[in-house]
Image 1 (spheres, rainbow, N blue to C red):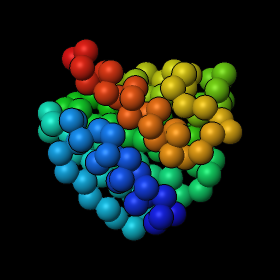
Image 2: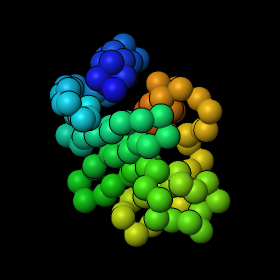
Image 3: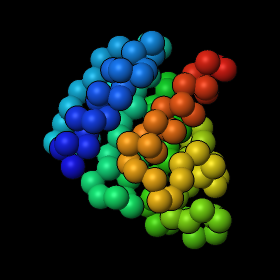
Length: 117
């Protein structure tokens, strides 16, 4: 797990240095600080359990695998889009790809949202 977080930090610094201004490595997560003061926390303890959380002012954008939205087609993956209560299908990440690939997919998605707002 720790090696995975180091890889996420390397990807963030190599490929997203235009928006990532600082990073913190913790035993159970990575936190990235963005140019607008918002932050991302990534938790990826095992292959099929993860959370990509972006906190931006009073809005959240989180893709996770918590098993509590069984009505979503992409269960257990889902997106909290703007708030905890607005839950939609995960159209960003993919099954059967590496955690690093899904991290890049999340970062690309988040970058596009950051540019729009």
